[in-house]
Length: 209
Ligand code: GAR
Image 1 (cartoon, rainbow, N blue to C red):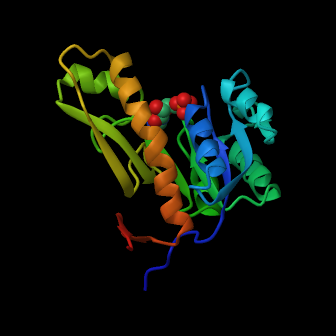
Image 2 (cartoon, rainbow, N blue to C red):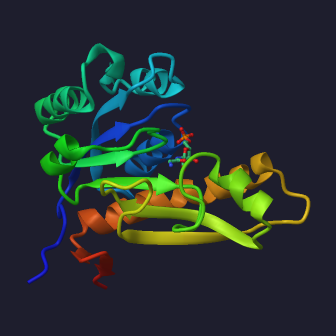
């Protein structure tokens, strides 16, 4: 029997290593009443990440955890899990979090960690996905929201949105077009979780209508 993942108002942690535009877009969806969630905490592994400042200006707890302060990924993630639990987080949202997730975090939040990637997975995982798409010469790219597993951008796919790749695109112009889609696709995917409409079986995600 399949079980809905994380139904009910979501208590989110956003993990971000950089700019934080997806974090902002999620906050805006919550403010508009389109995403049934609260952001309990924003956590970054980079002290200078603009996302931390964005959280502070929204009066959301902003926590920097330096992976270099720990002897191993397990120890770093144990601290991460402690911060998540102390904020009563139910779903972990990776929004430009540029680290592989390890077993400690995966075990603590099984099927409740989601990621957004700026490509149509399984094409172009990893870094510089938009540049990879331009260099390869694909005619379409887009974004993918997926459940996180131990691989790099490999977990079961919740939603994908497509954009055209234009002949004169650079990595940057394509990234802008994809980012506009990301800002709509992420909250819509999370709202499906909140509505209890997402089921997972093997590597497939089913959405109940
Ligand atoms: C986004 O484009 C996101 O898809 C990407 O990082 C950017 C973060 O932007 N994530 C990955 O590439 C993960 N593999 P943001 O900080 O403005 O939300």
